[in-house]
Image 1: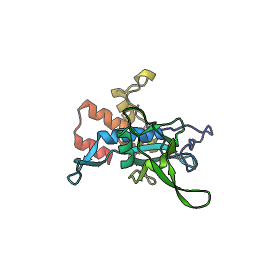
Image 2: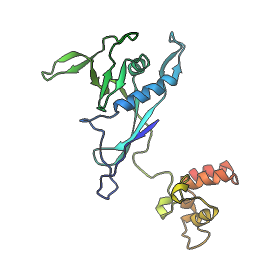
Image 3: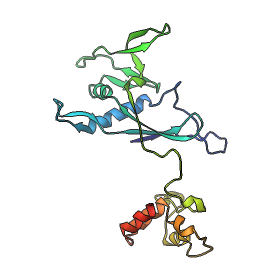
Image 4: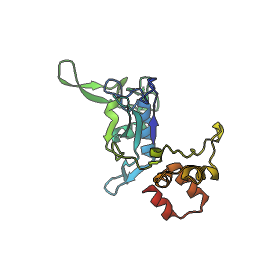
Length: 225
């Protein structure tokens, strides 16, 4: 699952607003709660667990701006504790994205005591009661990912200033036609020596050609490479 909160910073340079940082939050309480729900739906089988399941491989990714205004990808999971607390209806998101609420006990619903540890203003490690709320960071596990951070991109049509129309944009007057394929590969008009290579290195073009069913998967694989 992917969450995004990209907002242009208005400078016109392509940079975005940094919303998730050390003084705010990295994964909001709503994000964590949603991640916990899906991780509970897709638990990992385990023969070593009494229940037959342990944890989950379901990943939550965040596409947001960093401190320099660049667009970055981060990967997280809700902890096993978060999964259990959501399943037991112990916690619920709050209006503050950095804080998770502990539900009130009511007839038919038992809420156990919830504690967390923190470093106080005197640099002492103290235990705090989580009621009525506690920082959502205690429920987040940070993961590594394999997204490219530097070097050339795989789809390099942009190097020749080429851009095949994006699919599913009919509502705003953008469509994909056979004539767009001819224009992309340079059947008409001036064609540079390298245009043929760059022209087919376009994700949207390859998806369109695959949907037509006129080319083999081997050809499309070479387009990806």
